[in-house]
Amino acid sequence: QSVLTQPPSVSGAPGQRVTISCTGSSSNIGAGYDVHWYLQLPGAAPKLLIYTNTIRPSGVPDRFSGSKSGTSASLAITGLQAEDEADYYCQSYDSGLSGGVFGGGTKVTVL
Amino acid sequence: QVQLVQSGAEVRKPGASVKVSCKASGYTFTDYYIHWVRQAPGQGLAWMGWINPNSGGTQFAQKFQGRVTLTRDMSISTYYMQLSRLRSDDTAVYYCARGDCSSTSCSRGNWFGPWGQGTLVTVSS
Image (cartoon, rainbow over all chains, first blue to last red; front, side, top):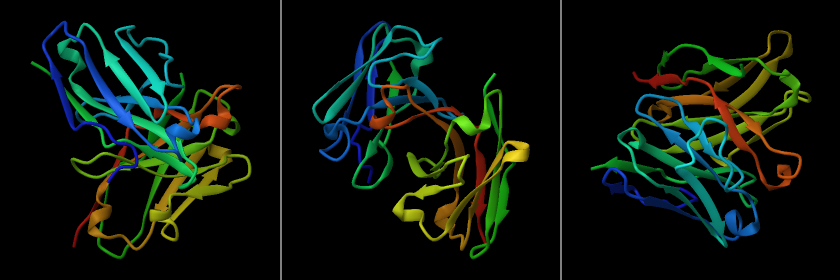
């Protein structure tokens, strides 16, 4: 059971907007620790998608955006494309565990 | 470019140990911590621990304390993760990843990037 909670799956038609939630607690996201997002294609290593809640690394399309409020964070994908089919993970730091924590991952399916 | 290259797949019997390497290039070795993350088949990501390249100091997730050892060889810019007393549920892909933060965000936790390509460790009798 993951410390951060994500929906197991979300889906949308090409061009639509989908959002993935990441819910934590007062010892991680709610304590002010940043949330970061990763994309993982099948058989590949995770790749940084969003860092420090809202910042896209160079090369990541602006269709991807992140937000954070209270004990939760969200990743939004607008203009959904077939290549966006992947697993997405949120990550933060937990003061009670003194280490990094991940969400369980969300599989995005493009219908 | 910044790159982490890991050693190849390993097969071990229960009770044995395994040592995975992670060679860093393209940046100053001592400037960034290295974290280890594992992913069991069909499962999510689990943070295992980090190593400070300067002091060699380490921090582990409680689940792995006592079984995992993180070391580094500064002369060849390589990190190592050794897991002992292997069990079948240690079968997973093990990743190394560089921890990063900005001057204003370090107190709020690191992000991980880039990642190594992963090393599959299979534990089977």
